[in-house]
Image (cartoon, rainbow, N blue to C red; front, top):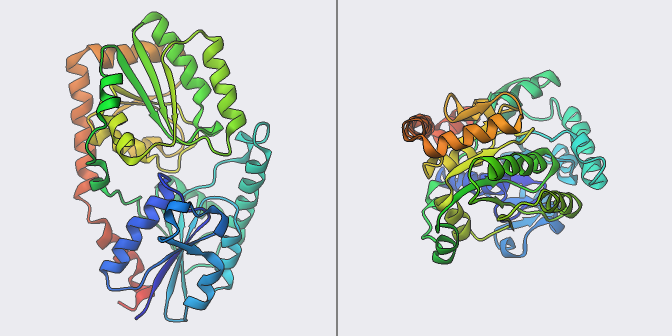
Length: 358
């Protein structure tokens, strides 16, 4: 039986790229192909060891009739391995965050990103098909000399968002006040310091009984995490909750209790939480950077500048002005329906048909 295997730099729980690989694996298996996920051994989360395999083992699993898909997002040995493997080749580009965001606080991460950018340039021409998860990413590949670049967004398994609520979270966070949520890794490109500063203005001048909730891993980003916590303390903020990595049930529960999703990130190749917020009818207020505008696709509220007072004022309007809030939610539902109405597995098959002989 022919196979379509995937290579990822890291394989972790709650990670957007890991989840994307899992969804694609299901699609490939539905098509009748054998399919596995391979990653650098030290990056496979213990809970996923039955789902992921060490990347070096892939060489013995591939033949010329098989296809391998590389998820490109950071510097990794799997990027070099990819070029030496037999079979047909596909690159799925999730974007590589500029290293400058990490140079001061996380020099090791900056080095990995610089390596990834170098590998990305070297991989131009290595694959028969290049798929970016956004047009923003596709334009970046084209600018680096890639040809045959298509756009195929992250495929969301919405069934994962139907977990029952965690009653403890609901009881804790649904007792008055306003819950401002951001979901995403605790990393400098996410601009959590800006999130804290804007929230300080909001809590002081707009809704005093408000909470800021951040859900996302800070593993490997402890220095930045500590800096953001110190900033929140120095600003005298109350009810700032850094939840770290959470279970899927808790992840869904925080969306359920959220009143507003605030994203001030400066670099996103897609930003999956925007669509997740729409699924829960949480109004989105997001800074216009990288692929944010493309993912919102005319919905939510797009911020052109990071000025705390106007943002805090808009946050208040989205919470208090029922007509405005309902209009924003309706716009988000329309955008979400446009996404859901696409047959993304069929689109993927059309992209890959020349490689699969169909």
